[in-house]
Image (cartoon, rainbow, N blue to C red; front, top):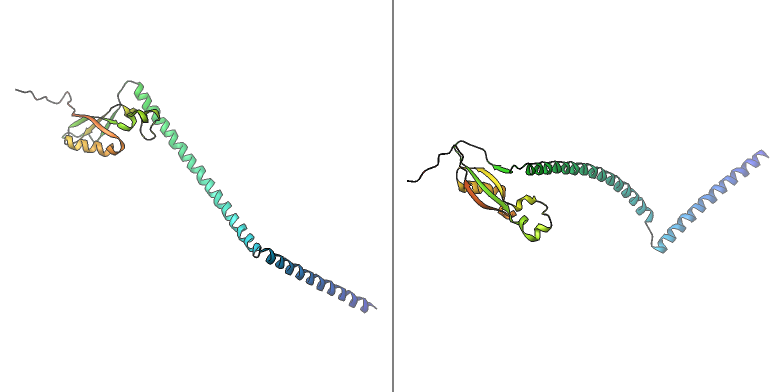
Amino acid sequence: MWQNYSNTLISAFGLAGLGFGIGKLVILFGERAIERRHGSEGVRDAIARRAKMETKLEARRADRILELKELDGGVEDVLRQRKAMERQIEESRQSGERLVRLIGEELQSSPCYVAMVVNKYVGTGAVQQSQHALVDPSWAQPQMIEVWARSMAEARMEIERRYPPAFGYAVTRMQEFLSADTPIAKAG
């Protein structure tokens, strides 16, 4: 009798497992048939690929956010430095001293030339209304530049190298600087 019960029980479990397997196969083949009918074959693979891609894109986004934060910090530092320099320039303007730009090194054998340079793009009426982004507004007025060079032609070349005419800079006047030490040649 026990043997009969155990055989029946084993048969029942076997039939249940077989029924489960058949049901699973019917569901699997039914899903495939529905996917083929609606043209959505390979959706599971595409979803898996896109899920991997999404995690990689999220990691890349996090990296880019960190880079942006670092660059923002750098930009803030540069802006802080620019404001400090603009403050220094404004203080020097208000102190009554004239700002003199120097080019070259003071050498005993080289004379000093004084030039007045202006930027024609800053001084024009159309551009004057909207402030020029790259050139300080003070360039609308002639700026004094002292150049140490062997000749006036070399001095002009140095000025044009530092302040190119292509960017709107123009030399309005240039002369050799005569100090109190320099003997003045008398005519006659």
